[in-house]
Image (cartoon, rainbow, N blue to C red; front, top):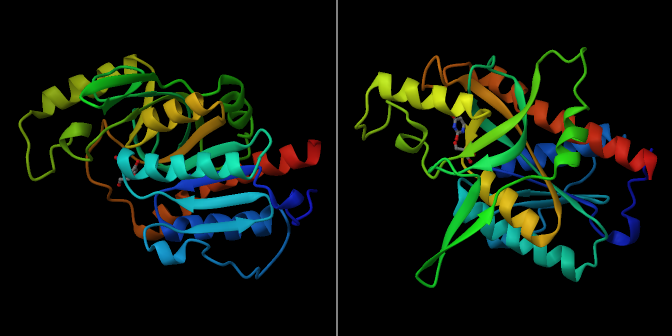
Length: 267
Ligand code: R2B
Ligand code: URA
């Protein structure tokens, strides 16, 4: 089993996710489940930024990124710079998160193969100096398959490998009918969600295309592992009780921690 002492202090794994609380929990989860350390004192290394939180457990960095692409890409680019200055050798960056599932049981986990933008293209399109820069949003195939292979028949949930739509909006952008603005019908919504399903999309969140594109552009292996909080074919509201949702959010953590353990054991 890998030693908790960072190898020369250089991060080998970075895991990012939406909330400060969840990323602290991930750091605790890794410290206990990968390094078998209880009650490790965790320090938020970016506390004074007030924007996001960073924890370091041996060679694993756990960082929060907020909601949506602009916030996530700001944090991700800071991390890419940090990994460069730290001379990290072949690091792996994960995103763990929550999402809405398509035709799969709530509580399932999806390991993403690619990201799809709101125009149904597998790309991240960013305006740069008045023009649109289009970057391919394909994730490292081997890594996503290796992570998918961490799933076991003994898990109490199902894991899927598939496409992930990253919308720029939680409500209309994800074809919800329960937002403050709505200009489409239930039939339009179902037709759209069915179309996504047919394209191989298994879940919808708000960061996938940009995460896939920037890790690829940086030449860094990246993977996205999200739990689904609901089946969007059956509704829009997340109505599962809070305790269950919190348990479900540990599922991507468990898969990523298992992968890290296996990786450290074999290196
Ligand atoms: C999933 O959940 C968040 C929105 O509630 C967003 O960050 C995402 O991708
Ligand atoms: N996060 C999203 O972006 N969409 C969902 O449906 C659930 C979580």
